[in-house]
Image 1 (cartoon, one colour):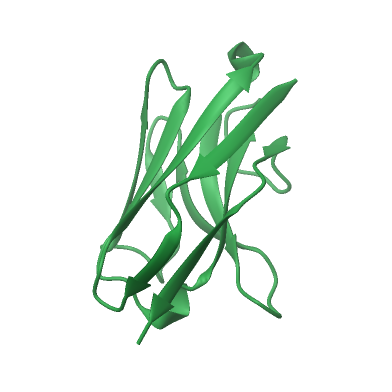
Image 2 (cartoon, rainbow, N blue to C red):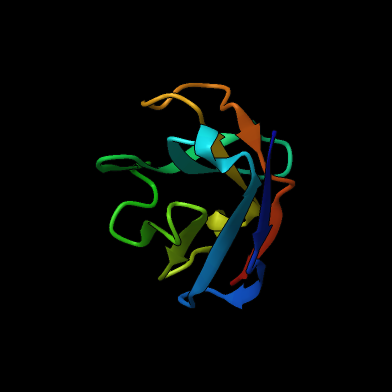
Length: 118
């Protein structure tokens, strides 16, 4: 199995920045692509960003967030700039065994809270 552990969430003022990290462990050779999702209170979980041979972003974060991967693909990052109150959510790391972006992912992290104050 694969374990995903997120970190880096917190409270930030609007216009500020945060960098989320996701550490993968276990049978990471299963992993192919990875991504980030988020879920705000009372809302469904939504796609944020994905990285494989290329990157994909939700329109709501394009130009403000950057997804990247390091350490033999075992660490995933999400650099979030120009944060807005509507970015407030629990952010989840996701990992896929196969190439592509599909739902649900094969593995989820436990989530990290991001709160943006106005």
